[in-house]
Length: 396
Ligand code: SF4
Image (cartoon, rainbow, N blue to C red; front, top):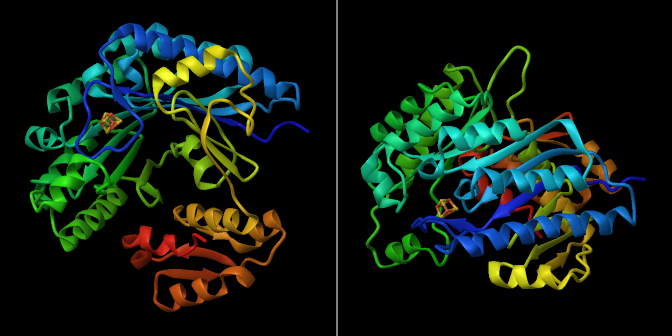
């Protein structure tokens, strides 16, 4: 039987600047040599891991590859392409695989996008965040509205026909009308996909410190909910399918623009993660690779085994009990608007889901956050507005 992993995530742990709200594993690295060494280490990591796994079981065809970060486009086109080529050389990559990369407007240009497109990348996710320079400055973003618009145009010129734009709401200085302006400007580019995220104050970030000190003025909760509800209605009018709490795909008669890679996460399926700080998940076990690029490079270069679960690269790992995995599967699956089939999940885990989560399902249904119909459990509209709190109830 082949290894049940058909998704690969590649983490590029560098950014030109650190945004005020971000707690991702990313570093502002000026030395090009360090970036080049990290690229080489990532390629070696991919090759060693593939060889090590292939000795145990045939590798399944890879259906999705996602380059995230950090800022993948901080790398040169040849560096990005060399990593993708390494995946191609060591894994059976499906000819119809979705191959995505995140892109930052300030490090994107037509030439880079064209080289990525001809190497096989077929989806770009551009971190636009806001269409207002004052807000972008408040976020410590490194780009302007003009650069975001140029990046989108360059992506189209390079031939990308599957484009996601990341936008944020609930931001400092953002009013409902500024949020509407951002979304309308983004819609003018006819993106195939939109990811709309509410700002969250992550521990250790500059925003969190400012907020704790009473120095960060944010829209109140009602305004944030109004922003969210408004965009749900507006995107429906514009022919988008709201398929996940924060994600919207343009409906098309022959194509499906849902992000295939992220659906692997929402279905709680296995994936390989490569690069400094990348997370992998297989058989209920989740682990992270060495986060600091320098240590990651050193460890990869020792050439020790990079086998899952025995890896010298591993810094944080956890094996979930089957009940914890079940809870996570519900929590992630309920993010999808179609919800989860309790019958299918019960069969997958060999349990009766309601025996384990009877109290949560009954209470959240009674309170109007969840709906259970023909064994399909879904978030209601009210549940959608408080999704993170509601779904957290399934974490054991
Ligand atoms: S560009 Fe993205 S990954 Fe980098 S610091 Fe900003 S939000 Fe974080």
